[in-house]
Length: 351
Image (cartoon, rainbow, N blue to C red; front, side, top):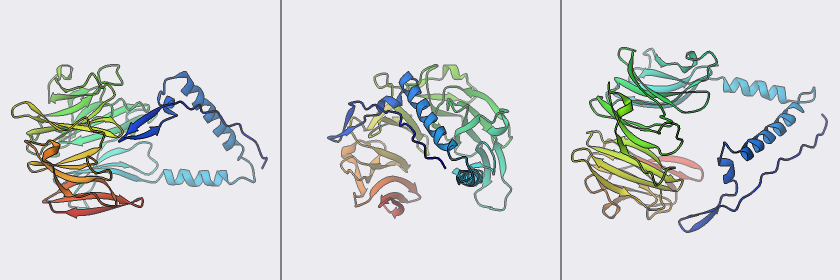
């Protein structure tokens, strides 16, 4: 095989530095985050050209590229299961069948492994070029409905639709501009909170509320922050439906959280304006919070829903040698994911 010297496309560095918990972190390639800039387009084109030259150079009798290519294609064609959510006896699973182009949403039994699966959503049959993708899904608490997002051609600019699982029919409700949405259903499935973007806007993500059967054009805005257009809010709701949790990623190392008491309409601050990350789950009348507030490697605290501010947090899992990634309610216990030595483990704690 001929030995070809390929030019390395230049990648300019910029003087961009962020301060995280007092530590300066350089980000010299931030300019590449602007996917629409001519400079980024030119850099990508040069990288693609160099990659194609390198691959094409291996198409000869002495090369093993074709063998590796065949093996890789075979592996990528295997069936894959990506995500599952349980609602009662209903198990909603994202699966890609063998050799399929796209992932589908499949309904399985959570108790009877021998029960036949039911194909709920198959994006691969929607467009002739198989360019329609399932982006996300959220079943209602009783598993009767599932809200899901589809997008075209890799845009991830989802359109929210609602499937009646029992009848197999779609509701008339459709909501656009729901890229990367989260959905929090009311307990009675009469409506839900969701995240969406203004028309023709890649920023200013906000939290809305939709009542089933209503015109989504008049859905009220529940939360927004015009002063932080790049903020990324997500929503969860307590099992009894009283509290709505809005988690807001302000930056990769900064997550705020606010609770809406739906009974009186008041907002409660859980954590804000602190350079720290946290994740949340509901447990009875308390919040489980896995947080780096006061613990660089993470700790798990409990906070009462009616007074969730940080000075009232009670530590139930102290900071240790491993990094605490998340914590979730499991009956009367808390399941904690801890990473140590690049290996995850799950610990069970009683608060």
